[in-house]
Each structure stands twice: as structure tokens, then as C-alpha cells.
Image (cartoon, rainbow, N blue to C red; front, side, top):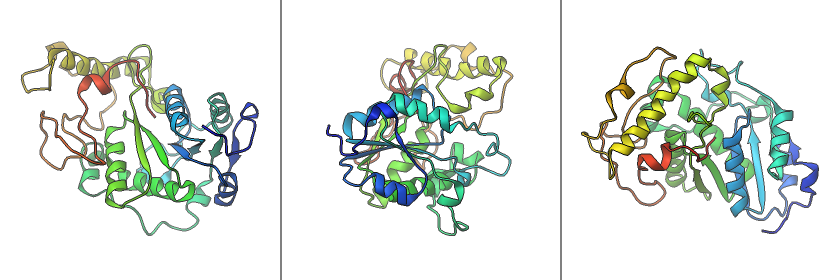
Length: 286
């Protein structure tokens, strides 16, 4: 790849805070890859940056804790923020531009017009977080408008989110390629997440039962999952721990009743991945 953003990557990324600074930074930027994040970056984000670098001349990482996707009793104020540390991580990965706007920059007035996630956003996680995915799609659309990327990389850990982004891009004819990255897991099997810092040792041990159950189910079903392919009983035992937001075997981009038969789709919406491809250890995410 060429290097249209004329800067020495050894000095770290160019940090911009406004749309005007962003436009100047991306003048003659060539093929642009965007990695949208809310900060508190970790190894999963590193893998997204590396994937973007493979196909882009200029890599932009956005860092913005989006208030539109938080409910009234959620962790907007407590969400971890560390722009200096995030900038250092971006420098280590050779990121060209960090776009870190203030809330007043992204939403200078009450947001009257939003991108409705529709019925796809009302199921699974959306059922327990009303309006969450409308907030996600709205900020993603704004970022696409500001950055004008050729491609954007999202982690497959948030399966419903990436499915909705793909559907939005297809339905609204947005000129951006959506690239999905596999889930990165930590050494004990827990999916990498900025919110893992909230977990106590007991919470973390409880959370691991989900990935273990998924792996057991994948091992029990050599082909496509079937209703009879259940993990061993201990994997399904209810254990104390933090409440779940969603728990379903259905595809997040389907509007049908839950089913263990993966749908086959074409075009911008990918076919539902088999468990080994998205639940196994050693891959990456947001």
C-alpha cells in the first residue's frame, strides 16, 4: 500500500477532534479503512486495526463513547475512558489518524433524525436494550459520513451489531465495504471486551460457561447444528452470576422465530457462521 497521509508513523497517529480537522487529515488519503470504537482499546481492537491495514492506505480509528446507544440505567458515565493509552496502542499498530470527537461535536443539537434498526434491532440484545441499535446505527452512519471510508472493520463478537450494519449498508446503498473480524479470546477463553474490567473473579468464572457450552455444542455437531446436538448437561447448568442481556440460538438478522437451522443468504448479509468459526479461541473482535 502507498502512504497518502504524509506523516512518520513512528511519531504516532494524528489525533483530530473535529470534522474540519478530519477532512484536512484525509486529503489525498487513498483507500481509507475505518475501525469504529468506543475506546478502552484491547487486543481485539488491535486485530481490527491490522485487518484494516491489509486493505487500506490510511487507517482511521474513531474513539467516541456514543450516548445514543446507552439506556437510562446503563454505564455511560462509568464506561472506561483512556485516550492517552488508546493513542499509544494505535501508535503501536501504525494507525494513521485517530478521530476522537467530543459529544457536543457529534451531537451539537438534540438528535431529531436517527437510523431506526427496525425489527432486527428489537430482538436478542435489542429486546432488553430498547433503542440501543438505533443509537448504534445512527452513530455509525454519522461516522461513515464524516470519514467517508472505503471499508469499515467490525468484530464478529457483536454478531447482531455487525448484521445490522451490513443490512443498513445494503438497504441504504452506502458505498462502504463492511469487513468482519473473528472473535479474539483471552487465555481463559473469555471474549475480549472493554467491559471485562467490570467482572469480579466469580463473574468471570461464570461468564466462561457460555463459551464452553458453545464449544461443546460445536464438538458434538460435526456438521450443521441440529436440535439433538446438545452439549453435555453440566454446560447448561444455571449458575449464579451477572444477569444475561440475551441468550438465543437464532440468527440476529432473522425476523423469524428462533431456529437451530442456519439461514442461507447472499449479498451484503453473510450466512450464519457455524460455531467453530466464531466461538473458538484465538481469533479477534471489538
